[in-house]
Image (cartoon, rainbow, N blue to C red):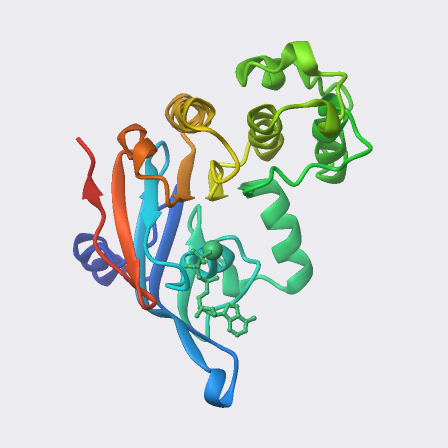
Length: 243
Ligand SMILES: Nc1ncnc2c1ncn2[C@@H]1O[C@H](COP(=O)(O)OP(=O)(O)OP(=O)(O)O)[C@@H](O)[C@H]1O
Ligand SMILES: [Mg+2]
């Protein structure tokens, strides 16, 4: 900050991380060792701004989940940087990184990953409590926004796949996270439910200014996204606008 000129130049080159959203620069990550060593991420660069909904497609094993893992501070790249809301994740201690993740990053997985014993409302209350959120927290508003207010008292086993996924999305947004990382949310859903879930993600991104990265094999839902990028052999192509 002592010398603003180079910083401004970096901004123009697009090197500076986004103040709101996700920025990945030159991320490289190898997994396994010896014969099984693979380059899961090969010089990956990516910016996803607040309110933007990006889909990532690509063959199995191309590194899509690895990309979400480094974006969500679940794994560290061997080199390169990952910044969320302008915070370089590698500069946080392990404890601070976990707290940062809880407050700033929401995850949605294929199966919803809900806790079997808890009702939909309690799934949300638990995250609020873990994150040190307000005692007055009321899950009703968020459940309403994903169309699940009428199932607030149901446990996951009493919900359909699409309903579980919608509760999972609401839960990922409890802390006001501005980065949502979504791995194949429609894999277990039929066509109509898939469209509903992805449309919901698009609306949440737009209305709450959330940067959303969704990995999917489902080409049927790409129309709801702002842009699509393809991953092949650990390399991420430039995002192309959907419309
Ligand atoms: N823990 C690990 N140790 C070694 N190699 C791994 C490990 N995890 C993943 N890999 C390898 O890293 C590469 C990228 O895996 P990744 O899970 O990111 O792929 P993906 O694109 O998400 O695939 P899919 O579409 O099947 O989910 C693959 O070749 C995979 O075999
Ligand atoms: Mg995967």
